[in-house]
Length: 169
Picture 1 (spheres, rainbow, N blue to C red):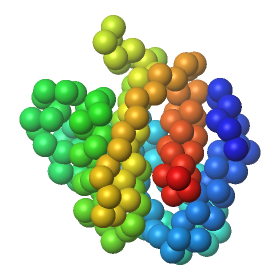
Picture 2 (tube, helix red, strand yellow; picture 1 turned 60 degrees about the horizontal axis):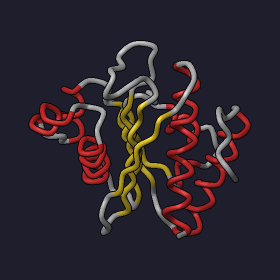
Picture 3 (cartoon, rainbow, N blue to C red; picture 1 turned 180 degrees about the horizontal axis):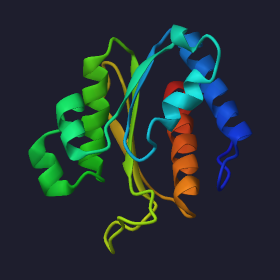
């Protein structure tokens, strides 16, 4: 499957089903750490019957305080790089994996808009991080277009697509 510009509910469900298949084939359990997506990745995954076999849970950490207390993101990281940064998403994905008995994690942080953007980090700036237990975390920067819902939909699709890519590469 390819990512469309703004995925529909049907497309998001197809991505979630692909991740479900990937996780089951590899006997892995997935966890999420979400900021700008507000739990939408976990929702897409748990919309699938039987998801408790391969999805353990998720953390919605919208504030900096939640990122620190729930995921172990360092205050220094947030002060130096900001909540929307590669450094922060790497700490988020590692932190959620450390807190759950899972084999795979995804984390997202970004600016969904319509407010909150800056010239350096405009609305639509999203960092997504992935990590498989025992491996190094990776992160990727995205610049999504559209309104708040469009940015969030694209974030969910890119996060799920990245899980699939990580598990099949």
